[in-house]
Amino acid sequence: MTRFGKCLNSKLKHRKCFVIFELSQHIATLQEEKAETNEQLRQKGIESTELKQSIDEKSNLIAENSKEISSLLVQLNDSRQQMQQEINFLNESLLTNSAELKNEQRTSSARFAEVKRLKCENDTLVARIKCIEEEFKNYKERAEFVFKSSKVSDVPTHVQSTLSQAVDNSGADTVSFDGEIDQLLELLKQRNIVISQLRTKCSFLEEEVKNSQEYSKTLLEELNALHDSISQIRRQSQLERQRTIGEFEQKLKKEEMLRITLENDLKLINGREIVAIKNLKELKIECERLESELEEAKRKILLFDDKKLATSANSPPLPQHFIQKQQRKTSFSIQKKNINQQQKQFPKPLNLPTKIPTDFLQNRQSSFEDEFIGRNAVVGDEDNATMNSESLADSLDDLQSMLREAEIEPNSEIPSFNVSELPSDALSLNGGLQRIYYSHEEYNLIIQQLNSCRELLSESEEINVRLNEQNNLLKEEIRRLERNQHRAKQLENEVCSEYFKNIVLKFLTPPRVFDERAQLLPVLQTILHLDEREMEMVRMNITAQAPQGNQDQKGEGSSFAGWLGWS
Image (cartoon, rainbow, N blue to C red):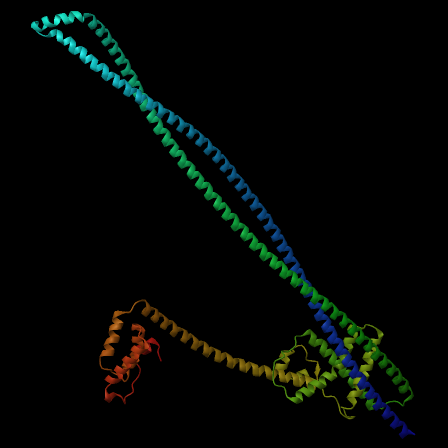
C-alpha cells in the first residue's frame, strides 16, 4: 500500500507539475497579451492626443486664416472706398474743369464776335478814310486852282489890262471861292482830327485783338494740359485699382485654397480619429476579454491551491531535506528581491552591444525564469490590489519551487557569491553593495559587461588615435589646398612676368633632369590656357627634341611642380 501510495503521490505530483506548468504558460501568454494590449492602448491614446493637438492646431490655423481673410476683405473694402472717393473727386474736378472750359469757350466766342465787329468797324472806317482822302484830294485840287487863280493877279500890267475886265466880271465869284476855301480848310481839319482818332482807335483795337488771341491761346494750352493731366490721373488710378484688385483676388484665391486644404486635412484627421476611436474600443474589448481570461485562470489556480491544500493535509509529512530546499529557495527569492530593489536605486550598467555566447544566453534565460516570481507579483500588485493577488503570488512561488526541483539535485546547494570576492572593477560599478549576494548568472553578466567595457575602451582609444592621425592629415591637406588656391588666384589675377620668364627659360634651355620639360607642361597650360590640341603639339615637340642619351636616366621632379603641389 505504501508503494502504491508513493506511486500515486508521484503521479499526482507529476500531473500537478504538468498542469501548473501549462497554467503558468497560459498566464504568461495572457500577461504578455495584456501588456501588448496596454501598450497598444497607450499608443492609441498618444495617437489620439496627437490627433487632437493637430486638430486644434488646424482649427487655430483656420481661425487665423479666417481672421486674415476678414482683415483683407476690410482692407479691400477700404481701398475700394478710397478709390471710389478718388474717382468721385476726379469726376467732380473734371466737371468743374469742363464747366470752366465751357465758360472760357463762351467768353472766347464773345470776344471773337467782338473782334469780328471791331474788324467790320475798322473796315468801314478804312473805307470812310479812303473816301475822305479822295474828297481831300478834290478839295486840294480846287484849292490849288484857287491859289493859282489868285496868283494871276501878280502878272504884268499889259496882261493886267487884258484881264481886268475878266476880274471885274468874276469879282463876285472870287468872294464866293474864298468862303468856300475857308470852309474846305475847316472841313479838312475836322477830317484830319477824325482820321487821327480813327487811327488811334484802330491801333487800340488791333492791340486788343492781339491780346485776346494770345489769351485764347494760353487758355487753350491750359485746357489741353489740364485735360492731359486728368486723363493721366484717370489712367493711373484705373491701373492702380486693377492692380490692387488683382492682388487682393490672388490673396483671396490663395486663402481659399488654403482653407480648402485645411478643411480636407481636418476631414482626414476626423476620419483618422474615428478609426482610432473604433480601434481603441476594439482594444478595450480585447483587454476586457483578456482580463476575464486572466481572472478565470486565477480562479482555476485558486481551486487548484485548495485541492492541493486538501491533499497535503491527507498526505504524509515532507522529508527534512525538502523543507531545507524550500527555505533556501525562499531565502534566495528574498535576496533577489532585495537586489532588484537596490538596483532600482542605483543606475543600471550600460547595455553595450557585444557578442554573447549561447551559454550566456541560456544562463540569462534561466535567470529570467528565476525572476518570474518577482515580475508576476509586481504585475499582480499593480493590476489588482486584492487578496486574490496574494494567493496568486503564493501559488506562483509554489509553482516556481516545484519547477526548480527538477533542475536542482537533492544534495546540491545553491552557490552564492559575495561582492567582496568580485574584482575591483565590479566594486567600482556597485560601490555600496558589499553585502549583497549574486548568482552565477549575474556574476557572469557583470564580468561580460566589464569585458565589453574594456574592449570598447580599447577600441575607442584606437579610434581616437586613428582620428588624430586623420585630423593631422586633413590639416596638412587643407594647408596645401589653401596654398594652391592662393597661387591659382595669383595666376588668375595677373601672370607674374618674372615667374613666366623663368618658366620659359627653363623650357627653352636644355633640361637638367630627365623629363623636366614634360613636368613644366601643366604650368604652361595653366598660364597660357592651352587646349588639348596645343598640348599634344607641345608634347610631340618635346619628345622629338629630347636627347637620346638622357632617356635612360630618371631624375626627381621639378621644383616648380612640387612647389605648385602637382604629384
